Image (tube, rainbow, N blue to C red; front, side, top):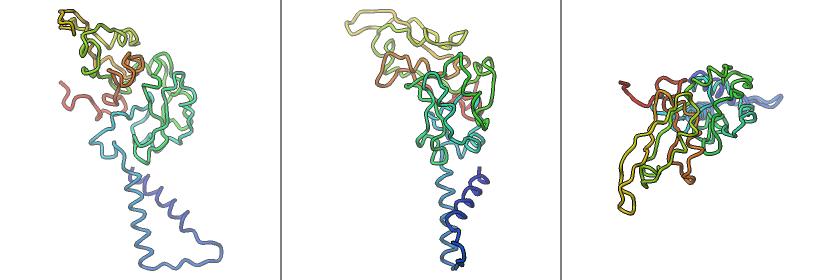
Length: 243
């Protein structure tokens, strides 16, 4: 990553400090110092993204399936938008600052706009630089791009004692990644009712986001996907110390 940034800074400095034909560059101590500080500052600014230090990760930075580890991905991705064009559910969008300035306009999945279709691997086939590697549909279906979580303050069975199984119905994995626990709760009328409260199986969830996209709570879904558990980065996991 540091070498990549140094190369980019060098190219930028050459472009901005190139003299016109016949002109001479008059380098003073102040100009050299200023150029050096500008280069360092640029490298620092463009190197600021949530995964640069590998100590923290942006939960909203859910990359398409088959994406390389973040450093390699940003080095190879040319922001051509081909993966966005072929996504059948309109799930892939350009980043703003989820990946820092260096990752601007690189692809990220927005689950409220779409979801990663289980029976599709088009984005893995069209990337011209293999920032997203070519993988078969069978292999793609086993890639974890993230993990789903429930917000119990918004989920109907948890927060309002109302039955809802929409997320589980749409879960596409052969063995459902969402399972239910039947719980007896008290509703707003003081009645004892039995509801099915959903849970996520972290081993089966691939982070496709269809549960978030189809959640009946529309302003802010009661189930959401983060990048935790992504296959491409063994350090970005749900549990710090897996059992």
